[in-house]
Amino acid sequence: MIISNQKKKDELLAALDGAERLFLVGCGACATACKSGGEEEVFQMQEWIESVDREVTGSVVIDEACHIMRAGRDLRHHRQAVEDADALLVLACGAGIQSISASSDKRVVGGLDSLFLGNIKRFGQFEEKCSLCGDCILNETAGICPVTNCAKGLLNGPCGGMEESKCEVDREIDCAWHLIYERLKKQKRPGVFARTVAPKNWDKRRKPGRFNIKK
Image 1 (cartoon, rainbow, N blue to C red):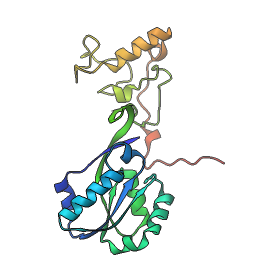
Image 2 (cartoon, rainbow, N blue to C red; image 1 turned 30 degrees about the horizontal axis):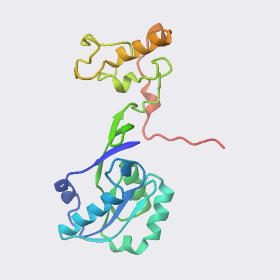
Image 3 (cartoon, one colour; image 1 turned 90 degrees about the horizontal axis):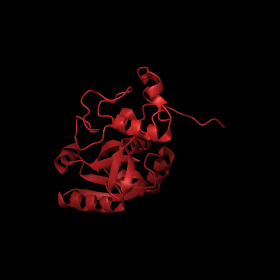
């Protein structure tokens, strides 16, 4: 899930300069779960837009705003309201914003900042567990990613600042490598500690990423 939050209102006002009539787009997936761009947030945004003397021509919450074909279809269903707008204000992650931009020649304004790929701990609480590095060693680290969970992204064990199993960057956080060691110990296997891990192959994270499922 892509974790996002809304931009500050003064930043939004600056981004909306010159756009008096707006069509609002929300996302029914990640942004809804984060309470940054679902139906409720789109309605609240409409109220705010109208309070600063702008007009809302219409709105839609797309099931998955990052789905390019679906975004295009849903915008076509609201063709007149989109045409009447000076800009589309999108409450979705960066991927969703770009899906909307690819589906309309209208000016697109992003209303959210994308933060990280998050795991859901419980309702309203999200934690980053994966950095999408493309070179995963989770099989050797007992399912704990050191690239993400270690503040320094170390690949071959803890740094010298680890003390009493806590991270030197934040003493409230457990050292990722201590967690890896303890879990591997319970599993009675050496895992990553049986070898020296080579520097990460960042070529696997080349931008922009593309992946096609073979039929």
